[in-house]
Length: 351
Image (tube, rainbow, N blue to C red):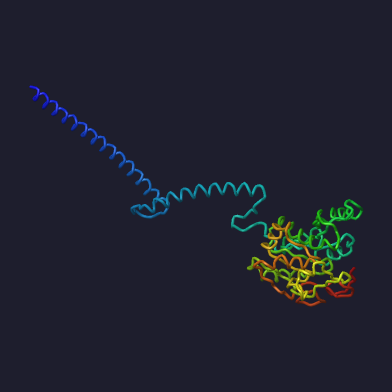
């Protein structure tokens, strides 16, 4: 009897195990079937989505296509977010608005010209305004039509707030054509610092193609300037001017004395640099000056200083003869304001 009972219990145990296995198998089948149904539904959705997006026929969808659809969805979300940010930036004036045909309503300036002037040079400034720079509406017209922004660049008196500073402030309130550098003292030894801070200020304020330094004793032919610079738009690091080199003067009683003459070697010769009456640098170089303004060295002369900033950079030095100041010539770009030099069809005397 004992053996028979044991046999019955073993048989029952086997039956129970079989039932459990059958139940697990059934549940597994239902689970797998459910998963397959879900995957089939997802597959159908992706195929229909692919048909909708790509317009292809009843082709089967691959794994690559599935990933493309997912990537497209994410890109669509990203583009939507970027469009919202762009719209907000436009409303705040950070991005130029575009018309329906995709053109910008505000053209990028071609060049910002900083005309170096001094506290007592009002007559020269008036001559520049009359000759080529313009004032008021004519100044704005040059900016909009030719893309040329011209401003006088000046520092402050050694006695800040004195009558000379007040005179400049009063003149600027009438003409609105100054860049006043409060950190520069109007003195010959500050000339290099003045040019450096002009480039930095202009690059931070205007997104122009070029930035030019000029003196207030020259006439600038705007049409020749525009065509000359247009030829160099493809070079992002161009340094353009009437290139020269020359002797470094080491005696204090000499006109062009260089206190740091010993840095230029035994032959006392300057490296190649653009003549100081007028020279131009591209946007990338102006940004370089702006970023590194605190560590760029200033020599006695601004043209030497500017040339030194680019000696160690991958910069294209353009020796452009049209920047060499001369008497009247139809192909020249700049002319000295000298007495009895014919600038148009008549002659006039300058200060």
